[in-house]
Image (cartoon, rainbow, N blue to C red):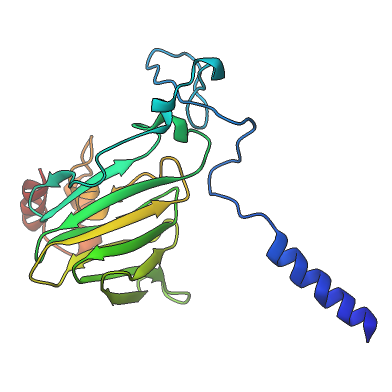
Length: 224
């Protein structure tokens, strides 16, 4: 009996004391402020570090998250990201944050973050949000996990899964999202397929969406 108690205690202790890891690789030094060098001949998984002795407080600082970001035409939402591209001190730390503002009936369309899980908190408004999980039996189907969220509610979107946010209310909705990556990336499903460069041939899209090539051309025109 005492042996099983010891094994159980050891397992529980190991679980709760194990470190939590970001999706990105763990840093190998205290700070690694990114250098945006477009002429660099060496590329790394992340960004090149500047000399730590040249780092300054502004490398770890960004202001303006208290105001709305850039509006996306046609969808009724605006977004603002704080990631390694505008806060170089985030390099190798495995975190970033974003703000999204939705007008009434505004939509953040189906999209994925290929390198991060997203944890979203609603600050204002009423937001219908959800993500899709592929069906285990048929890859033609998926399972929807969705909730209607109010201020103070938190919802998580697992890494790489398609998800959306829609403002159900009559006033603006505001959300903050945190990611376990310094550069989570974003792929918006409708526009990515319709406006790729070079373009996907119409027959492929028509067959995939079960539409005519004329209807596909109309879709491409809308997103262009």
